[in-house]
Image (cartoon, rainbow, N blue to C red; front, side, top):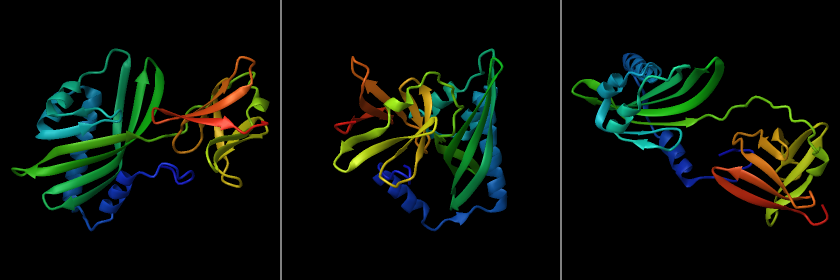
Length: 249
């Protein structure tokens, strides 16, 4: 959900925002320290390939949902923790943790800062995690965890022979709904309404760009057999939104 474009307001997101605004106490310092340390141990166990750490930490009815939307019970989650293959190494650091207490339940949200090396190439991925712990027999146990990938600016690619003059125009997907593609020197930007904020289009390949907004969607210009641009596709959340150029473009 992005405030710039305001096109994907999700009722579920509204409910989450409403629930998080309800009264909740910041966890006492000793509890916060313990929960953060336990969470870091779980993150370390991913890179170290130590399933026994997750085996001890999870409740029997735990539910883990990862950044790809895969839902795992305890058995599946523990089984998925294994040493990284040769040539791979990595770590996940718990950053900016917030821990709130609800009686014998605590909720932690934090950034997971992952650094990975793949045969000498350095990769960085940032995640947002929310995890729920419950106290069982005097011990904190992980009952649920959810994480999403935090969109970040990817490396810029140099694409040669980009025909920038072919793309500017108005591309519509509904009454009074359009993307306005404009050229700004040797770059492209788009707006969702006249006078609105300009959003950069970062080139990926000929006729393919990535939006510079929070969603990082792909924008693909399609051509007919004669080479004229006849359509703009915004590929977002595994779906394609089709936009047609105004007549006379």
